[in-house]
Image 1 (spheres, rainbow, N blue to C red):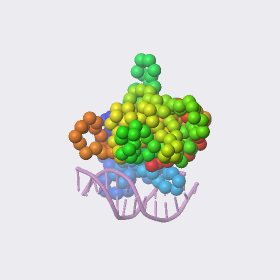
Image 2 (cartoon, rainbow, N blue to C red):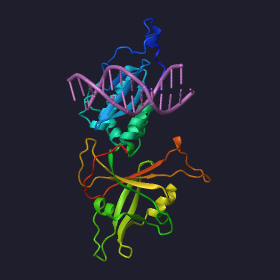
Image 3 (cartoon, rainbow, N blue to C red):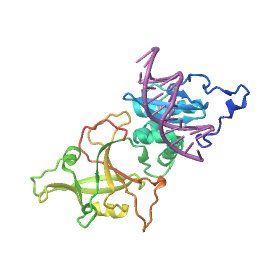
Length: 294
DNA sequence: CAATGTGTTGAG
DNA sequence: TCAACACATTGG
């Protein structure tokens, strides 16, 4: 629907009852929640969060603005949020929303690209028809921690140093004492890679007193083209309603830093950072903080 | 200049 | 929390 997008403002223009002179907009108030009239006859959408207004953009169609508000409300306040267009909660859409940062959702609304992105995600994840359809893009997840990879993380050491605090808080406990302790493996699925599974060995190096992801890491680095300065962000799967439990799947994303040029094998629409996502299992329980905008 | 989005206030 | 309203800021 958002395809045709803007430029439908002829409705109110066509009539001769035109606003004409007065800068005062039309019907002062909108019958929709979160919708506010704009001076030019269009409609703005906004939602409040923590005493602050979050602008959701302007729309030619009052109903479109209302829809934008609804989407934001669902993302910010969850399923039970009061919305303009009530109805049975769409699980898929809720998952789609939960899987994205609020800022991203807001951005999509402001750019009027939300519907397109939702459809695309739904399509790639739901309909496919072959084997294990993952719909990874729809898996709700909450952030755990991230790290900007250092030169050594992507160098010959073939390992990623996991910040101690985060490792101990979010990764399964390691038996440092046991000599012949069985290696701990963490399985991850690559969201961008169509659900490909990666496995990393997770261990503690007493020599450097650091937690590390070893076997499998270098391969990942190579195939993903990760370089120093990129950021790997870990997150954990959670149910759409925020409920969290033990042994939930875990994700990892790699935000690539802007490349100078040269190889040029990947493109960054909008000049931003592309994201490589993975998620895995075998993760011990951990409390997860509330999601945040940033 | 027109459109957008923030400052800000007052009501609920 | 929320919307009304003014107006500063953007953007073409």
